[in-house]
Length: 244
Image (cartoon, rainbow, N blue to C red; front, side, top):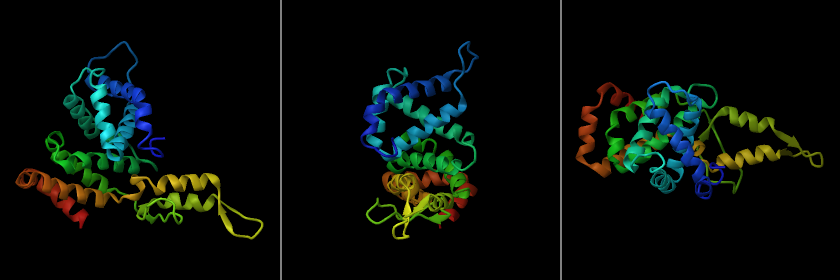
């Protein structure tokens, strides 16, 4: 639903989002064993993935959510924001592989590029860690193996998606018995429409990271050069190579 209606859904699901934020905060701040059932790590990763999408699709809705949820989480807005950034960094290796793994990693990195672009102080305090995740995601990026071309007048995606999706689209077409012209099934058409407007599928990760670095440099000026100089030179070299 968030993928299909990024502008309409956040306000409708805010009560649920707030419960999810409380769960993330509870899991992140609870260190001693508790008699209550611990929150499954996979659930936390799924929550973080939803918030990553919310951040890069509708940053204003994300900020409003943090403002409204901070009291329930017993955090200030800055504390809650810092906690989420830490959770994305800390749980990145828990995403796992499989068909969805590269896409989830891409969405997390895209989310972290949003505050990096604006020179957010909390994001900048984790500059080196964010760069490291960018390198990891770009090095293992399998989300641009094939070109995704939407139907005419169907969305504005002109970039890339996975070859498995294109294969699935072909396998789900049906034949019009009247004229022999291949016709896409309703399910395949719906899936195509979803992805043709989805930034995770439409925006190459490389371009997203490039623009984030450029915007960050423009936002903070000389401080950007200082951050780069204080970061791991090998990692920065890898990033530069991957972005070429």
